[in-house]
Image (tube, rainbow, N blue to C red; front, side, top):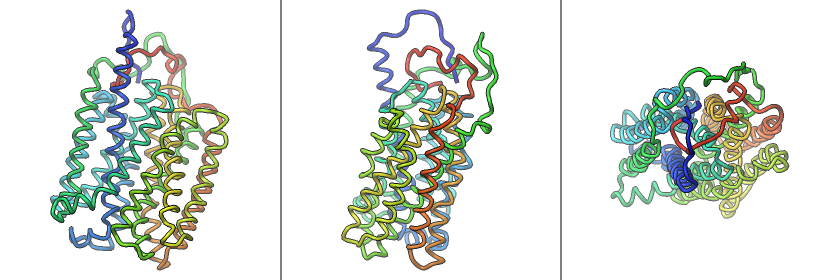
Length: 422
């Protein structure tokens, strides 16, 4: 959406940098909060049956629920942003996330519904991140820092859940519930960074003097290519994070070592998630990067399958690097391949909504393949084949016109003070 601007001198350079820095800090903290709800559960998958009396047959469903919630809640973020302002919409989503993180473990019967609610809250905040970046004309470094925040949050969730369990005297409940605290902190910061009420935002129609027709998003094939790329890399990510620890235990590693390697999977990818959007801003690099990453993910998956237990540190690290680069590129494509902030918000909602609906099949499909075959070979080969399809989606995502839902003139409108409320 476009902000109504008043005539007069713009903000000072120092003031502009301050607001931009505050907006970026809030965005990174938000991003850090959007993965621990998933990776903390994945890191203690083998303990859930005893701690919460969970039927083992429900474990694949538990892995699938957050991603399924992502798929059905994509439109909520833009809808809330239109009514509350983007900053307040994200703050509300983080508050709901904090409540869900507590309720799902304090009341064991609500483990599945609470996980679904947490997924909806995560998605609501997540789809608005590219819109905020585009509205502030953030560079590739902005997108990179945000995607690195996702990876850092995932790594912290997986790596700290068992140490926290020990710190809380063996209480898995508290080790999972404590992640509500950073969610609350993120809500406070993003709310304070918003600065203006939604009354300052145009919520319908085009600004005065601007007219034109646009092609519906569903008829823009570039939007579908970006959506396919986002969905396929997300399907791979959630399949891996849901079952990697279980696979490593089957190789003879202890549950603690398997959880540590799951955390390493995310940590190893942090530099790649930061640098991938920066490199993607260079057309010459993007031309090879978009399809090439899919092929590298396929090779890394087979490496994890074939490597012995003693080499899994290296194999998992390589997989984490290329997988995180794929996520960074997916987020960057939403910004790069959109014409303006409103287009970025709509493309983000479409790519993450449909993409995560597709991604929900990842954990469930990987678990079912393992159950049907009694091993992991077929599962890993299927995931590698999917990564090849990801390469094809990347090839088409970087071709064709940019995605635009804004009448002519909106995407190039002069930018004033950075803000999270759009």
